[in-house]
Structure formats: structure tokens, C-alpha cells
Length: 253
Ligand code: G
Ligand code: G
Ligand code: MN
Ligand code: NA
Image (cartoon, rainbow, N blue to C red; front, top):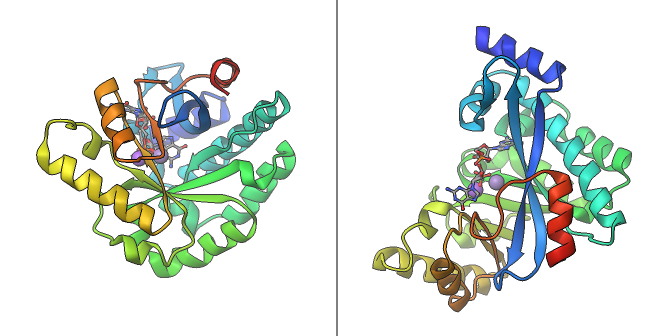
């Protein structure tokens, strides 16, 4: 609880901010988007990793405030990239609570209006596990998001147990394959086969497929051969400031 109060204060003090990780086409030549990832630079504790404070925030309503902050910052920066001639979508992670509490749709509308961002340049990510555990409550919100013209991606795909044919009935167009499936390829035959099956089935159902956590050229080659569409990972770009991302766009936009 003390930690929660500290986090509350950190939000008010402006200690939280977003970095942006570029997403590339599978050749690695062009940036096709960027994912907003929240960071906390604490006056008191130094940098606090999201794996520490996101779960705390998710256990309170703080995640709604953090989500709103990231959404605002992401839309603002994506509008600036677009003005500079690089209209690539920004992705924002949604927490379960944001989908159930608070005023998500209004927060989204406020963020894009204040930034003057075309809705198609905002994409929202929801994890497979959360989606599957709450389809009935979440589905109407997903339809609203799509009706407003924004993109929807399923995050950490493969860690839950949903079937792609089931997912296809939801208004989702992008599948982000969890890093755990990428980690040991090429080499781990089971994962190689699994990846190939996921990608080809996803394509036959018209999903766009993004590989997460690509760290080596060998992984990239392997994914390109499987026909994977896009990728994210340390090989091509770490989470970086919005200004640095603009530089990346100038080189690879
Ligand atoms: O950036 P990093 O790999 O350290 O993020 C760790 C975890 O925190 C990831 O699962 C990521 O999805 C989550 N995360 C990062 N930024 C946000 C955010 O703005 N909102 C939510 N809900 N989760 C985030
Ligand atoms: O859960 P989600 O996919 O939203 O989280 C993305 C997280 O993955 C971020 O914390 C980001 O820092 C991390 N990440 C991104 N690329 C790589 C990578 O190539 N390797 C590893 N280990 N982590 C990565
Ligand atoms: Mn994500
Ligand atoms: Na993910």
C-alpha cells in the first residue's frame, strides 16, 4: 500500500513517461509502427521496471490513470511523426481494468482529439489471456474501438489457449506472437513447427502477423521464410524516446 501511494505521487510528479519501440516489416528495412511502453524514473528509487509497478498499478485503479497518461503521450507523439511525414500507427497496451472500469472510450476519444491524430494511426493491444477470460464483457468495447476506426491487436499470442478460428470471429486484425515462441528458433524443432503452423493458419484467416522479441538475424531470416509480416525486437530497435524514434523513421520510414 505504501508503494501504491508512492506510485500515485510519481504519476502526479510526472515521473512516468513512455518510450517507443519501433516495429519493422520483416525485411527490417522499414518502420511500420511503434509500441508505447511506459517507464518510471523514480526520484527515490531510480528506474523501476514495469514488471514491478504494472502489477501494483493493476491491483488498484492507478492503471487507469497510467493508461490515460500513456494514451495521451502516444497519440501526441504519433501526431508529430505524421506531421513530419511519417504516418505510422502507434500501439498502446490496454490493461484489463481499463476495459472494465473507467471511461476507456472517452479517454481514447479525448486523446486522439487533443492530439489531432487520425484514428487509424492508433492501435490498441490486448493480451490473449485477458481477452479469452472476459470475451463477453470485452467484445462490445472492441467493436466500439473498431467502429471508431482504430486498429486492434492481440498481444502475447500463443500463451493462452484460444483457437485462431475463434479469434477470427472477433474484430481483431493483428496477431502479435509471444516472444517465447521466437526465442529458440531456429533450432528448437517443436517451436519451428509451431511457428510455421501459427503463421500459415493466421494468414489463411487474414490476420497480419507480428513476431515479438526478435533478437538475432537468424530469427529474422527464419521468420521471413515462414512469411511472417512484421517484427519487433532488440535486433532492430529497443524502446526509445519519441525524438529518437523520429530519427529512426527518418532512416527507415
Ligand atoms: O517494456 P517492458 O518489456 O519492460 O514491459 C513489461 C510489461 O509491461 C509488458 O508486458 C508490457 O506489455 C507491459 N507494459 C508496458 N507499458 C505498458 C502500458 O503502457 N500499459 C500496460 N497496461 N502495460 C504496459
Ligand atoms: O507484453 P508486451 O509484448 O507488451 O511487452 C513488450 C516487452 O518486450 C517490452 O517490455 C519490451 O521492452 C520487451 N522486448 C521488446 N523486444 C524485446 C527483445 O527483443 N527481447 C526481449 N528480451 N525483450 C524485448
Ligand atoms: Mn504489447
Ligand atoms: Na507481447
